[in-house]
Image 1 (spheres, helix red, strand yellow):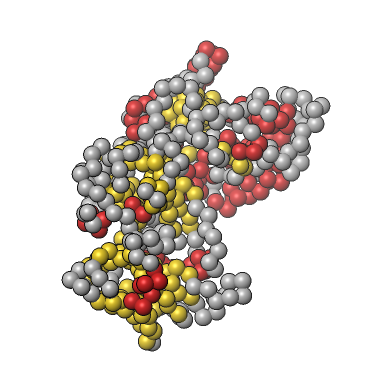
Image 2 (cartoon, helix red, strand yellow):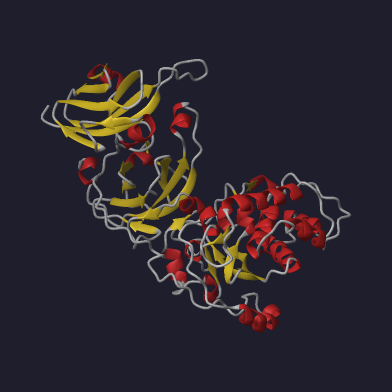
Length: 527
């Protein structure tokens, strides 16, 4: 047996973004649509409109509209006003395209505002709940929405039609996407993941828009057969990321058939597109980035079965909480020999880096899914369940395993180390700032409170040992603003320590309940 603790400390390299490392000065825009012969007559028109692009925005979401480039000067507040107009308009049926565009553009100051109003009007519509009259003409806004609901029309057609009535130049782009059912490591060798989206010319440059992904997403998709959509597995949830998405971010999910429509100075090949990390829109919403600029969607372990994924947090990322899931890549199995595969992953946070250290228990490929959510300290202390969403996935491949890895002790889920205690509870680690503790038979862990907490409980865990046999090994004490957790180990080995606490006035369903604060991995020797 080789202790799991041996390879826990990851090596961190300097972070250089994978895509953004390239020059940020775009070349000239594409001069044709990828729709094929039907759009060939538009080539001179597009060429006349093409001009050098400005520098791409650094961040996603609202920051992309708050730039200093000419004309794209809409503020967050004003775009919220545009959104409110579109949402109000969406509550009523509009008979014609002309009337709809007149209403949506009534307060617009620029082409960006008009495109934004169109995007919000489309994406606010929940087709699962809408009922359409059979008498509605197909060549109307409501007729196209009905066609989308029943699979005879598409979002990109509706967006392009509305743009044409608004006088905005919009094209349809075809290619591949890492859509529902796609997994890291898959190859685009068939038509399962074909997709279509839009590019619209706004204030001097082309901008990507994906109304379908901005309005809804597919749930419970197990493979690429997601074209046969039903109301039951389509969940409508607005996503701002897919309006005017940065090209450096869009390429992580969409690959156009025509490389010119990547809008990148150095377009990726299809093989590169398959290999770059599989990330979702929340990755950019939370302003995350990978430490390793060479990181790929498939991660290979070393001969001990160890591999790691490290993510840099934004400057003000204290509210971010991460979670993960590990299962076998080729099935839904998430256990091995009766043990959860989660126990072969160590999640830890050091300063502004969250690291997921995987130790493969076998040579069977694994799927690591990393989730995140932004949660305030007050919300976490209520003890209510937290809804996590996927930010990235990786295929983990272990080609050769020369040691037998033991699982981590069965503790509460989530990150190891005191970082969570500091972020959410204001506890400062005085004696042990790292997730892993190497000690002898006895250890005392000390914290300083920066805000009142009334009670602490420590729970010790060890593989193949009943937790009840370890209850008398821990002791918790409060002295002023200091917290003392004392442990007397019954023998050598690897232990997991869960620490729980609560505020004075913390009541959950009328009861005083403890909330998980942090956990340590402890290796006790010379007992």
